[in-house]
Length: 237
Picture 1 (tube, rainbow, N blue to C red):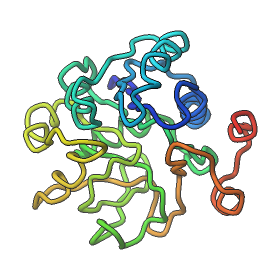
Picture 2: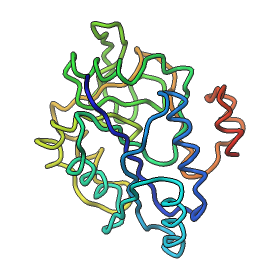
Picture 3: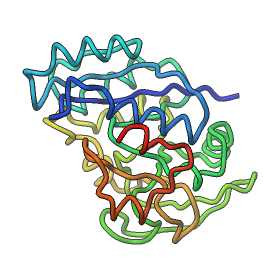
Picture 4: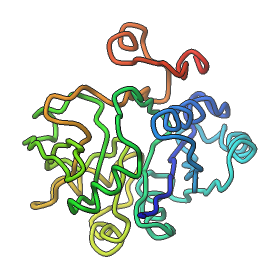
């Protein structure tokens, strides 16, 4: 059985020092995949540094293992997560996503077995339907031996994703650059010829995640893309 750890990356948004954004994301993750412990939270002090000290205290009260990112960037925490990881696979999750749990119809172990059997080192969940557009210059439908449908594409996005830690540690980490904000990861990896990532679901499959961008979801968008049987949105509105 392949092992996986969950990392969450957060920063001091205008809602800091409140922790409801990251709590809502974690609850959403558990609604999709079952209760799962967080291995580490990587905390970036930007952009509202005056909230940092209190936000750190609140995070440590709510979650174990809060790590400080000294260079204040997602990419530094991302590199550290690969270096400090102890499992075969890592789920990399920024703090402001909500999963459409009713559209994720396979367990985490099923997905890890798919990655292992099909040689997938980057497996993500898409905020748009699975079609060509943006950094997805092609979409190629595939199916694992146990029946999981997914698409291969040339985009290795920062959207919530699972990585093969061994391959990233030995190869991909060399391409990641420590840059400010959320830069330094997906552009560098997606620009490399021959690199491919998988997206959950067949071609045309609807969005499995919603990006709140550190804030709430507009009502019209929530009705369009988010079915919320677990009451995640209502509980954290």
